[in-house]
Length: 453
Image (cartoon, rainbow, N blue to C red; front, side, top):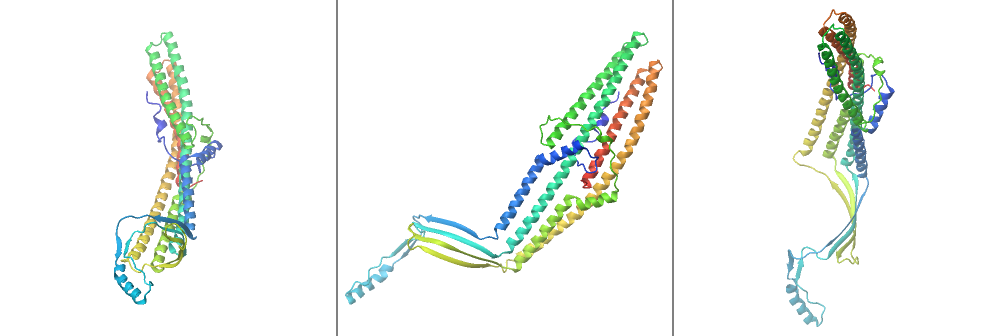
């Protein structure tokens, strides 16, 4: 007997999808919404967006004055010293002047022997700085805003993947439930076949080997059912993982979903919609805008200086006394790089090259999207034709089985013919089941690449 489950797993178990043009199901849509809300990957993306928003707040802060409280106290010992014999030079002169004037108006002076590192010295101050003109600050804010938009587009790309993943996994779950029903019906058929053979043996029409052979076919079918049940549980676990639920949570089946009609849209229209709405393109266009801003930043830095005003207010001196130690410093600063080996020209050229890279990437992704849409569209059309063939095959297999079964009951057919006919009808029904759900899977794939919501 052929393996009855071979057609159940033609498509991979772990595929990813979105709903879009797939027929609407309240149950499926509720799972999609739960996944979009609870999925751990999306939660991380939302946190990344919040982090990008904080980068904008930090960029805005650079427009405001910066005030810093900066006290420091220094103790020093050893090291270099400043030695100058000022006493040896002036004291003889001062002594002579005191003798001539008969006064002590010219005191003796000690030689200088001072540590260069100040000891017991403090500098306690408030520093402030305010940018009057700074191109880096202005364009950095613009760049951070565009990066936030790119991060939001990245989140929408992941949402599209989550939709696709939940949809396809749910369809596979439904497909396995239907396969379970087919196997149940087939087991009943084989059980009836065992009973029929028992009657034939009882009437001395057949020997006991036909009973054993029929029972063996039942045991093989039970083995395939066990494999199917294992795979159904795997899909259930995967679905719950996508929704961040307990892995054993029940999945409610919408068995009518496969009977809904799928919408039909022309290939040209789907391509146009994909190029207009795919978030990967939105993300790339935003990155191109970032690169254009970076070019302007480098061009402005090449021709304009940075101007700022600042200063210090505080106390400075030996010992923490604050007496006669107050001081104030006001600064007006300008920074303008006039020459650094053509570095500025190189940075401008580098920024332009980066933009050209992104332009080429955008064109490539647009071509890839059109290719993806075309492939998904033709695969969907092929799946629809396969369903027609599968239905016809099921109808013929059922007619063939009825004829063989009647002949077997009348002793006009051997067991191998009966088993082959029963296997053909099971295989045909499984093929038709796979073909029905394959249409929805291919529709989901087309919705994903076509950016259908």
